[in-house]
Image (cartoon, rainbow, N blue to C red; front, side):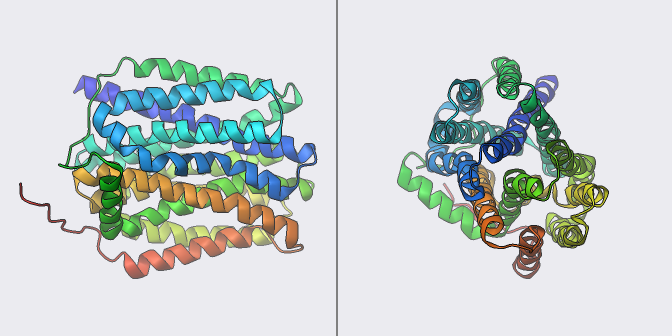
Length: 392
């Protein structure tokens, strides 16, 4: 039991450091590019590199995990992130940074996929929401801390990248203490074609659970990648932008564990519908308060409290719907849908800022949250599907 607890806390600590690097990169690079005169659409394009990396590597992740186990995949992913972060100060060009962000996407996804699957596979059903919410909580703590590094760009542009790579290295060392394990196997999952069949099976039974990770990806990337550009053009200074983003992430930290426990008690679907609908109201309020820093701060804090846990709740919901043999596939699909949301966020946000004037940026987010709450309300009426596994 002690070894299991130690493993859990090491895994969530690694996720916190990964969240820190992600939370730092999006607003930091957005601010650097905006100051250097890079257009919002190109700024948004560069932000998508991380999520393109996730999408590129996703179809090839399941076989190495099943063959080699969780630990080697985490070590590989963490190492790739550390090296990429350390290389940012080497050469400041659009496409070099695009490639580095793409590599970070591959490394981060390897790390998150392995840790998520390890935690979901080893968590008992009555503590699943709690454990995944702690996973989300630690990621949120890291992500909330990341934007606070943005003002350091005024001291030395290389400093945030160096600090982040050192922290990631410290967390990475602890992975070597863990004893490797492998996920539960299903006969025949040893080729790319069989992986695609697993994808189809998981989508059939759990598609509705992949929408919350999509919404979180859209939310996270548009707020951290496009909102800083929008805010700077509204004469909100860099320090205040980082405080607003930290308020959102802090809100998610406050309610992450309570929402996970409530989802264990009242059902994942009911909690998801409620928080998505409340998120729609909070970002609608932001439309009317965007010229007030205090008003925006309160709205960002409340918004984080209600929709900042959609990713972890989506993972828990997926784990309810799929059998253990499909959990690696389900976790991969959570990452893919998160990436699709993250890709669309900065692209839509950048185009919106560039071509649509005198219309609030927050209309995009509130519309998306309302749409997804209606879809889950309409099509996600069952919280559990009975999955008939083939007899051996």
